[in-house]
Amino acid sequence: MAELGLRVIGTADVDAVQALIEADPGYTERITGYPPGAADAQSLLMMRPEGLAEEAKVVLGAFGGQGLVAVVDLLRGYPVDGTAFIGLLQIHAAQQGRGYGSTTYGLVEGYVESTWPEVRTMRLAVVDTNAEVAAGFWQRQGFEATGEARPYRYNKLESTARLYEKQLVE
Image (spheres, helix red, strand yellow):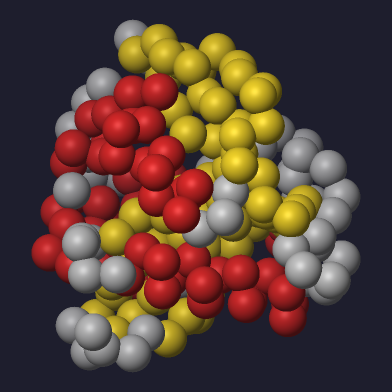
């Protein structure tokens, strides 16, 4: 497996992010009920929870010899101070099953610890329609289900989002 480097995704990377999203249409279909749309990468860069400051959101890319391998949507201080929320971690379909997910998550955790020192908790939600693919991965990274569940709706798709957390080492 090639070394990966993590950096903030900018507007110059939008085409690479769009290609990554389109390479794995199953993920988007499990989360939205639809195949990827032409503006999904642009939406990923711009969308954030209501009331969250623009500078509290960062989209990171994990790059290797083959270009963009993974993309991560990360929110600082969401839903509460001291927490970083992972909105998305998606590996390019051509690179799945090679350990890049775990490597990317490790880089993200290192980024959070070195860049956002106040963050002590990592948090994410797994939507039931994607749980078969995602839940085991997140548990292997040290996340535990909190027992909290919320209704999840995206247009016609109705499901449940289950929350997971991991405490960072002091």
